[in-house]
Length: 353
Ligand SMILES: [Zn+2]
Image (cartoon, rainbow, N blue to C red; front, side):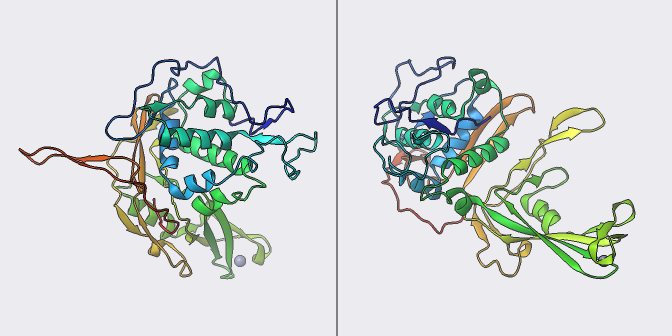
């Protein structure tokens, strides 16, 4: 899906990477672009069915911990300078440096969305940098899957730069999975890293219940589900299994698993039951004692409206840096009040979900 992370800097004498729009895409970029409205915010044009991508890109743009380190990468870092003397990124198959295409296009798109006086920008150059064919742009993708693929691609594209740890430092945490053998009482530990914590929505009314099911309930491995214990000569033994969060990232993502597969009918279903999540949450009860900072505030929500076969993605995002101009709803019989804000300070220690 995300191919062509790097593009040959071809040695054609051009000092900068020249991105080209995919002519196979149904672009609306040729139409006259309207200026921003009074919100001062910039949207993204829909390439057909790329609302899932647009919602994700907007979320990343409004995440200063992600956006600002990306902007700090220079043209040299991204191998955009043909006369760079840095040979650390030289591919083994040739002598030319490769442009970090996805990062270049993310930088460009973020800059356009922040600076151009347009109501919407085109993401065609970014999707081209993914290596998408035109028909892929129009297939509705799952935003959770795209998020993982995009992070993986960004991580690979940042290797060897001063921001090579960006995805890890913003989004990565870890859990410890425990299994205790009831025969010898030995406890086995396995650490797993995560970039998001998918939550089961079915039969759960809220975020807290889903987390409690994952991190406070103990599963009993008995009968056909016994545990093969290495301390008991690899015999099958009764055991108990549970998990705890051992590391929390600054930005924690909970994909809600509303799409389920019905084994009886073979159909894919979307669970549309009410599911509640708070503005603030303390995750202490789900964590190891060694985890100190466990409080989060809600930062962004990406919503899918529709069925499991079609629909629309959109998002609500907290404007931490006051990029937009927000209009208070007028109280009865009084004129609207408009609040104009300047860009805020970068807060590296803010935890968000
Ligand atoms: Zn044992």
